[in-house]
Length: 389
Ligand SMILES: *Cc1c(COP(=O)(O)O)cnc(C)c1O
Image 1: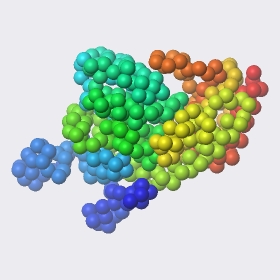
Image 2: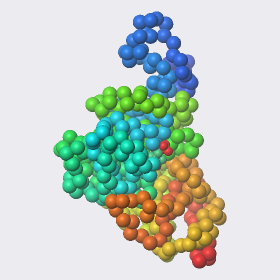
Image 3: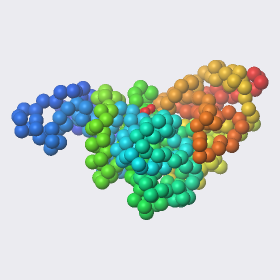
Image 4: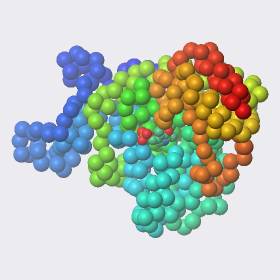
């Protein structure tokens, strides 16, 4: 079955809901059991139902099964946020005295978790160049327990050679975990590339409507028990209504992504033709950094990319551009229906690599507006930036 067909059919259980197509949100804390035997079996995890709302309902289970199937995994766990999914993955497998190899382009709050919390708990993190490939072998220590990838990084879009990294890791019994939010469960096959754990911020394209925060972790059988136990110990469960909304988002994810990609390609190509733009970081754009690896490892691209302006711009110039945008909102997150644009400041973040570009870096999310309207908006924005010089 193709993924489009899965999206239209997964998680429909009309026989359980009097013919209703969608699984309703089960808002639950208490779950009742008719006999002591069944109550105690649920406590031991031997019942078909979880013993308590925090451990899951048919709403969470429906979404778990959908994500596991889409990812070609054996299991998935749904959490209250993408960051919670990252933290679960790190803390389920890393203990005091362990060493983590973390990609330098990782999502910022995950980096903070490593620098502040993992460090405090006695786990050492080394950041590595996203383009290191099999060269990662030279950074491995006897206590290296996990290599974490995020390909492409969600600010600068370096595409990693994940199969090369996974080979080095697996030859040494090291786990490979990856944040695949950009690739989505549709355009990136994490397990085929060699990842053991696949993380998504479902806040982005899975929900797709900028109205919830949620994360997913998918894995194969051998890693499920550890992840499940760790998950149950965190309490970071999702809300039933959010599970319902995420399932609803999944139904249209393939058609939305197709449009995001088409429009992003158009806007990115236009930007790369502009004299004000130094470089466009959109792996799907022919000639862009990472394009060849993207073609090898991905089957599509989402609507998120960044550009480096050719020349330095003052704060007043940037304000002239940003404050007057008609369709590009200024705000965090991405993957919703609306276009977004934010300035980025990398100098303060990276440690393993140096960012070579002089001009400001802008991150764009191309939403579902007509791309010609978006281009017109950007054209006027670049004119304001120039005029304010
Ligand atoms: C947004 C994001 C996250 C965090 O997800 P939340 O649901 O906001 O906690 C993690 N990784 C990437 C790449 C993201 O863009």
